Image (tube, rainbow, N blue to C red):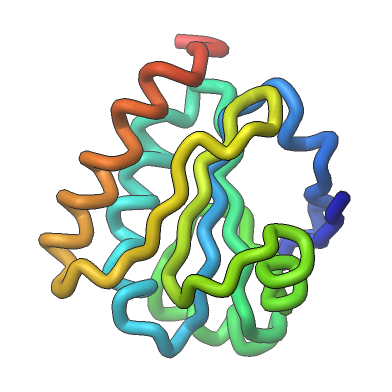
Length: 144
């Protein structure tokens, strides 16, 4: 069981994940590979906003540092600060950063991958190629 509060005040917990595909990203603001993935994630949020998908991120920094970072770069995921504890104790992972989990509507992890694809263009291509087939297979359209 986990619970976190986004920088916008929304509570995210296990109940939020039920019945939805969830893309969960772990990152920090001074991680070049983490930053390189953000445009691909934003693209997916925009493209699939009409589906039953949670787009959640856990950032290692505190809320103040995240807000400062987001002043110059948009990230459309729900952002939960101080995410290192959840990363290690709840999700039991020590892979490094960035790291992304895809969790199906029943709570089963169906994909886990680390980033580090190089530049933003390559990161965009890799993230889309990994996630788009899963989105199409495991999510449903809620509205047109």
